[in-house]
Image (cartoon, rainbow, N blue to C red; front, side):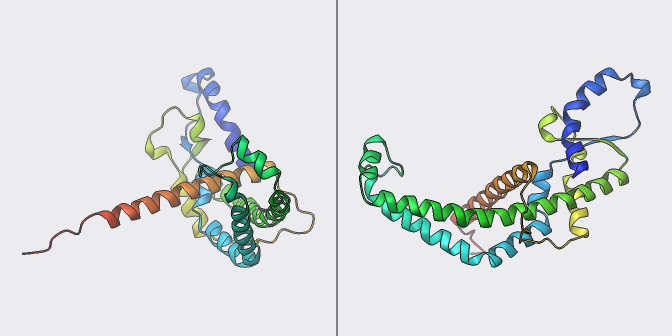
Length: 227
């Protein structure tokens, strides 16, 4: 975890360090670019852990789907313009209806169920972050890297400076079992929650891109073969 924090902190310090250090005194070595959430999102360890969450918390996930559908069924009649949300007039009618109390109860139940599933996933990400730090250190040593920057702190870099794939390969080469049931009293760190949110967003975007590519491929007319 310490290495991970150092990696993020390096981004804000490198620019000033390069400008202030004479060329002759610069340390010999490579500068690399790495994106921890993007690497973690596609690691075998996290994929396996998230699949395990889906199995271990299958009951909660099913209840989330069912109660979300119930909530939508209760609220939908008040969406008179059909835009998927309640405007001020629609909201006033909804709040005065008996369904509002039912929806409030459902919201509480949904929050409890969601917290259980999210906690398991954040706990998994927290462990994979530690694997990432170990793999990153191995890649740093093997490639004589003296500084690692985040993409957000990089104006331009040669594609060869990106070490995401190398770190991912190192992680996948040394898989570690990830637990998905947080111990009693466990509280997620702010860093773990932030990484989890980024990982979820990255995986969602990747899934949408894959779905769009599949749809485009299905829509392409079949090429004629022969006469």
